[in-house]
Image (cartoon, rainbow, N blue to C red; front, side, top):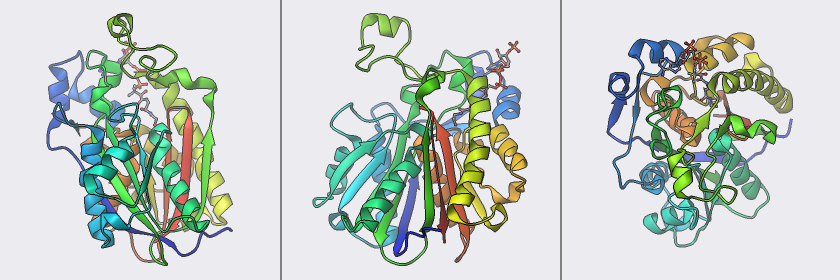
Length: 329
Ligand code: UT7
């Protein structure tokens, strides 16, 4: 076991926009029903930003809560890493927008893209920088305005996604959040199953891109569902092996919230009870890289992270990419 010692998560925060988009709202937008969405996904409502709000705005709100929780000022930060697939701009990075807005005058800043797996990817970078002695205080953010890249005429995808942000302050200090190890994985061979095809350097933005709605996320749901479930089961097993523990040792799983049926299938296949997994997908839908830190923050506020607990974070998303860690709380 390679415990990464003397690094801890000293503060956590999350922020959800106020405006709710319920299943009955969606019934008025596309040919769907509350019954179908609830049964197939477990989602009842999701949060949506007002126009004019960007991912950095949500990130700032979550970050200020996390910094207050950690009791440090923005000027003490050495680095900001934001995981997002909905950056304010291609460039400058969303992390730079956050850096300016919170006054993190001594911090470097960059974004990381690993879709829904991105927050734990970014967390691994923070732990790596700190354990190498390069940095002491790192702010890790997952922030998304997925409503801006959702095609609200496509009933097979628009029911899934929501907006939100979560943040964690990672510091060189003993305490809650010592990691027993990280697993990062990727398989680019089926990237077209979950993709935003237009607007990049391969298919630059044009009238044709807009006419063909290629500036919106495309998802081949059933195929993604199968890959996500199987990969997560393998990821659970690989993670406990790498961390030198058994699945039974895990007290709580913070799993990416993509579909309640995926969460249930994974927990069943690995032989863990649903009591051990945190679920809030009913309220927020899939918020991509914001999903894990929002769930972690809510779990903490609900008193579900107890001193000494082993907490597994795990996620899979576009790429495909997947990531996990086990934290000793
Ligand atoms: O973490 C990585 C990201 N992972 C995800 O986002 C999850 C991926 N996949 C899923 O969550 C599920 O595959 C969906 C919820 C997207 C779809 O569920 P499904 O059980 O795979 O349904 P399906 O796509 O096979 O569609 C079943 C039926 C179809 O009708 P027919 O062909 O059987 O007549 C669809 O046209 O349901 C229809 N359908 C809908 N009906 C009402 C598809 N979307 C809707 C809808 N409302 N919104």
